[in-house]
Amino acid sequence: MSGNAPLDRLRAQRMLEQLESLQGRGTELVSVYIPPGKAVSEAMNDLRNEWGTAVNIKSKTTRKNVQDALSKVMERLKLFKFIPPTGLAIFAGNIASNQLGVGDMQTFVIIPPEPITIYYYRCEHQFMLDPLFNMLSAKDVYGLVVIDSKDATFGLLKGSRTEIIKQYTSGVQGKTRAGGQSSRRYERLRDMHLNEWYIRLGNYFTEHFRNLPGLKGIIVGGPGPTKEDFLNGNYLHYELKDKILAQVDTGYTGPEGIKEMVNRSRELMKDARYFEERKNVQEFLKHLGEDDGLATYGEQEIFQALKEMNIQLLLISEEVRRTLYRLKCKSCGRIENRVVDNDKVADFDANLSSVKCQKCGGDVEVLDKNELIEALIEMAEKSNTRSELISGNTEEGEMLLRSYGGFAAITIYRSY
Ligand SMILES: [Zn+2]
Image (cartoon, rainbow, N blue to C red; front, side, top):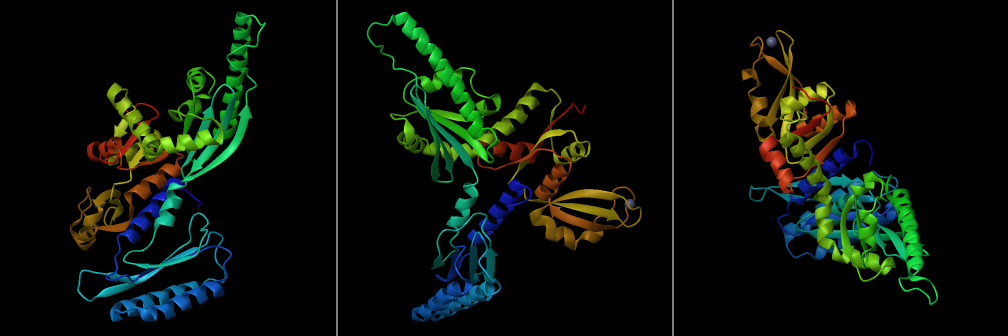
């Protein structure tokens, strides 16, 4: 995916949610996933076979709808000379509407953001979207580290896939000394070696994680107190300190320990997606609470701050469903922003003649209209302002939407 990553993700998410909401009357919605490398002619053959098999469907309506859907899929597939590098997903079916007996044949073609690995064909009540939903969440990456005084294993979790990056050994001796050594001297040497080990570990963390795209957080595990000693010491780059999600006790180190840690932190992983969102909203609330003049919210305030390039962090609730109109007065030429709830857009358009210029009362024309979220992110991009999308899945995200209208920002300098 190119361009603005969070925006691409939001668009993809919205589209999948829309597809997910569609239902067939019978088991007649067709989903086809074709992996890269498969010849178009071969995929066409498979689909022709499915079309033939569909003859056996007992219900006449369902049979007709499945075969029509398959024909639509083949029509679309024919437009491709070859399967794109990440594969192809095609969905078609007669979408059930409220009116009895009236359906609507619809076709959707999606080029997946990541490669599809298997071919499959499904015919169900709904479109089969799990592989695409999984790809969206697979964009999140978690760092995994298990350490003790002897070794360390670094890994990554991408979606549901765990991958070991590298293993290191410390060379630090065990707690029990060999006979003949002075115990105090032994302890002192061991502490020194441990300290060196922690410094090395800190460097490995930096090397593997500091510039890793999509890193959402790091989970550190291991048996015993080594991980705490390491994390509590000043060994970790400050940017990475903020990324530590949790410490997990494990019985093992090495790849076994990584596996154990992932299993133990399933719940945590589920929450981890929201960790950053929560942190960002809390940051805003902190400024608001301290009344330092750096917290602002509300559409007009955000527009103003964006215009003044006075935003260090812009928070946008994904749940906002509003449209931004740019209106131009036909009499005095004044240009004005107007925000309308999405479910009132049709009304607004129909009654545009009753919308008047706020300055001279003249008639207005629509210059353009846009999803408010997209418009704001684009504005932010133009001024190099950092913006974050916040879901409604956390208390903080809910608060952003309900109490602050869905938009909030931390400004660079006081604006009052
Ligand atoms: Zn006017």
